[in-house]
Length: 197
Figure (cartoon, rainbow, N blue to C red):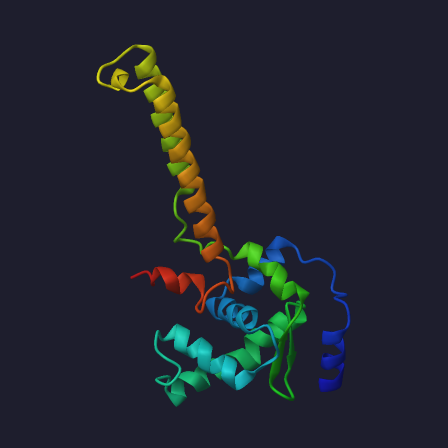
């Protein structure tokens, strides 16, 4: 069995495309998202023990050294018995249960588009852009009506301010999204925000 799994890791992905529903079903669990974070960060086959240690550290918000044997065992057992087999079956990773080794597949990399922003913590970019648009329209109307003190600055000056504001907002948006990609930092994106109380 271990030989078959190793061979499958080296072969092209023959699973067919997963639907979004199937992907979200696999990834709705935080522990499985942490597995992907670790695999994308390391980008090489990893030992189940190392993976369990890091996932436990993230879950219990502690360092690798401070993870207790009980915490590690709890994570190790559920990864081994439930989460990794489920992800292996979907072709999201290859889990060699005999050797205790997990390996990323092409699908591991592809899944980041579904996990770029952590649900419940997404910054309201749409509302920000809508607000900028509304403010810009109000400013144009006020300039058209010649309302003081807005007329102290030329229309070209106001156009420059609006253009600079929209550009800087877009730059901030791009920077934010890049930092929220799965595997980008040293910890999962959802830990960057802190936990909900």
